Length: 266
Ligand code: 0O2
Image (tube, rainbow, N blue to C red):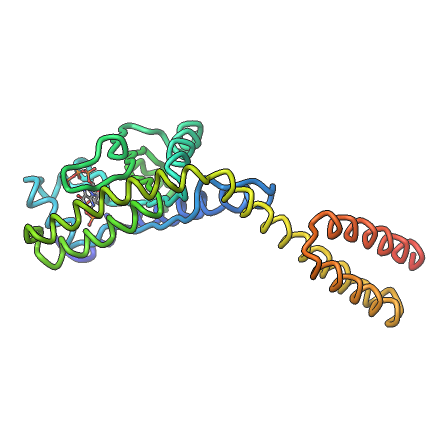
């Protein structure tokens, strides 16, 4: 197939990967802006390389003109979660969306592959708008924990190095590591609520501090320098006390002060 033709075929998949990545990244942002824990930790996307497409097509006996119809992972999105419980939440979020429709689900989390691979796969129908009009295509969404992703990434590199014939002694190590990953994910799930609380508090504090600094900066145009320095010193003192409640109170007081100055300047 001519290179130009590959470009034309792959272009909508590239668009789909970019759009889906932005959409999932935006979800993370929305959760965090609402001060809520995000079940999605990271999002990655890629269009399958031409050489991987050719390899897979050859392995599966797929003719070049059937590639789009039969290869479901030309567009691939990987969603990484912190905890196993988050995987199902992400599946539910995707289920509730109107811009993508699940056509197939593979649960390699409950049914680990023989290799030790664990991940939840969704094949979704997705529409992109191109210069030629709408194009319906399929994308594969892999959802897994950080720990599962660590294992899969290492194993994938070894598959590449050994051209899929990984020596037995390495296979055994990988199998033992896969079992250890299951235990690690279970251990982490047991302290999930503590970890989520800690992360939420950190995010709330970061937002509070950003808001306070923003208000102080705006005050530079309205208040006199001596007063601003006094406010700044007070902020540093409260910040060092690491007391979220005090920080909240300080923000409220500061907002009132800023409001007063704004009213005066009108
Ligand atoms: P790449 O390079 O990641 O794109 P098949 O390839 O026939 O086994 P099928 O029917 O395409 O599988 O679907 P399946 O089993 O759901 O696998 C699709 C993708 O899941 C793979 O794509 C991998 O990304 C990942 N995957 C599946 N099994 C394993 C595994 O044992 N180890 C690792 N590391 N990843 C796996 P590709 O095209 O094989 O690879």
